[in-house]
Length: 469
Ligand SMILES: Cc1ncc(COP(=O)(O)O)c(C=O)c1O
Image 1 (tube, rainbow, N blue to C red):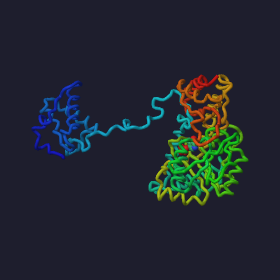
Image 2 (cartoon, rainbow, N blue to C red):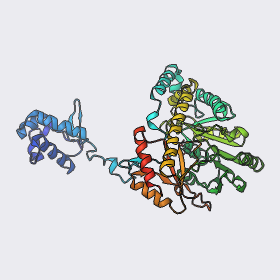
Image 3 (cartoon, rainbow, N blue to C red):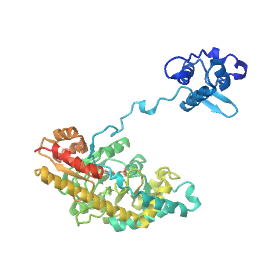
Image 4 (cartoon, rainbow, N blue to C red):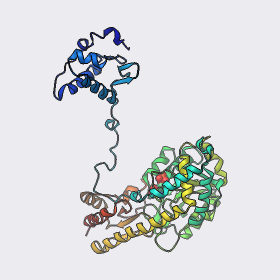
């Protein structure tokens, strides 16, 4: 309870038993003493402290010293200062434990390895800051006032129109804006579709894939059934009673090949005959380095494929924007799960991305990054040819990572050897579905987008030192 300072003005110094002792001078001693008085409960929450001049006189110290000590304790959260009501002990004077002390996983790369060759992140130094800012500014200037109200859960029409044109041109997707629903990325799409009950398991998945996505599905109560992989991609001929299948047809993640054309046709046949659904994860479809474009499976049959993409690889995973291209019969159900208003994907970012696409900045960025990643890939292949000629790199026609094939039984020791060289990366085993019999062999999944230019050469040298002879 607050006690009035007015009544106890003459007694506070001695009542508080403030002993200004210890190192660091009078100011530090006063701060320590007051903090201790609050912590011990001698000064209860709400208690009004004496004015500077009174406490200074009482303790025989300078007024400024008291003022400084109060200011410091206000900044730390022990005291509050308000015009007209003086300085008081904060209602919640026990400072909150800093979040860093709560038990939580250490940030993955806080004091991490010197060379980050894990897959997953694009080149963060190449985010098109200026072009994005131009699009953001233009979008903001042109936005009608209603943009600043609640957002449409389908996403801004400007973005859905821009994506309709872009995905048709760049990925062979056949759609129209009414069948696109904006989300905050691929993982969010999975949560909406399965967590929201639009789709149900069991879901067939590739025997190797991102564990995080399997976790998202498991959390939604979905049983995943692994499909074996071979040199032509997922064995879709093994599809059985599953209701849907999740594939990475343009660039199998992580092993790297495209789904063979016959398998693309076969999976569509399965969906038509069995009433099944193909979920197409088109995570890095823009980044192909050979001359054979691999379009989206969705283009073969828009009524049996949900095509899902995001800007996480092409721009940055920090933007958190993605899209679902849906068969018409799923649109209302997905919108119902999203609710009355947009709650995930920033409407202003959506408008920026729409401008970014329509103005051609997105194409320019993708072209520039394609060249850059191709250069990275070529340097990796050249380093292997020179220093580890027996190690083959596969899955290199596309994407931001390669798989280095290792002699049988050497994957775990090579991952360890890489760690000794200060390299973070994963072996293929890290991506394997726990229930699969398929063994994709021993290999390293090497992400080549992340290191900065000056760090990439040393990272490759360290990698080559870690590889078996
Ligand atoms: C296999 C795969 N799918 C999808 C994504 C995209 O995920 P999100 O859009 O949730 O960032 C990634 C990572 O960028 C990925 O590696």
